[in-house]
Image 1 (cartoon, rainbow, N blue to C red):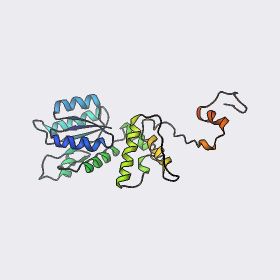
Image 2: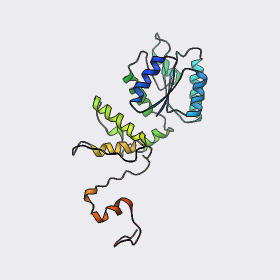
Image 3: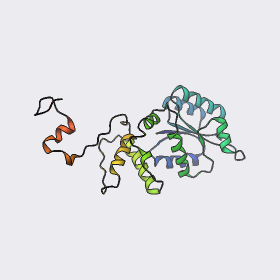
Length: 227
């Protein structure tokens, strides 16, 4: 996913870049309102993090403009970093129409979780979200149950592999550890999720038919090759 961070705070930018890179997100940053609008128009990000403390910028107008561009290009969520410590950040975010907020100072892991949930709750018009909804019952990260550190690491690895474009992935593990589940998660989180997931047990195939089962055959090429 492409995350655009609009903030002039170097600590905020570096913290978000470090935490989001673990989930294999691409982070683009800018501390200038004008360049931010240009990036939104040209890149159509999957999510925008907008720091409302941006100096020398009318952030409220910037937020409305970003939201307007989102309607014209592709709906995406906006997570804000509130400007006023004395105001309830949830109320401030809701008034603006933001998807969620990051209260400063924030924990990088918590920030990654908030952004992950915002992406999962993206509007129906968002392509990646539509793919997840379409295949929700077929398999994906939602089928990986658990929130321990190893399970979060596994989910992050699945995202990395899914978005890498790799055509071949080898999964190793004892019987019953969930290799099939992970294979489905990788498929349905990838750009090929709209294509069928084919599960072929190679050990159950005869040697003479293996090539035909995997790659197909021409009609009449052997006995009973009807289609």
